[in-house]
Length: 108
Figure 1 (tube, rainbow, N blue to C red):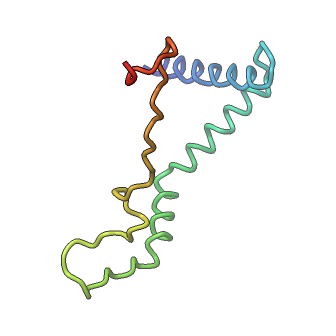
Figure 2: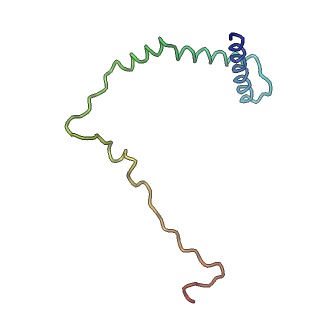
Figure 3: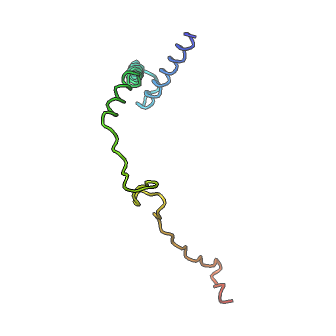
């Protein structure tokens, strides 16, 4: 299992390194590409760690959500300008196409 994990991780790192090298306009991977991938992967692991997410949720939830207004009953709808059901376009009729032979069909 460890060998399969190492192989998958290395393939992922080199694949991302090849993408970065191609973005830089190079055909071959350089050591800097691999270093960049490793730095970004470790930063990604730190950002998604459980202690960081716990701290982030505590910071976000420190300020309570304002209470909903109770002055009206029923379903609370957004303002009219935020509704997607309003008409936001105008229909324009197409002009009548002229006959191809140059004669008017109504004159016959």
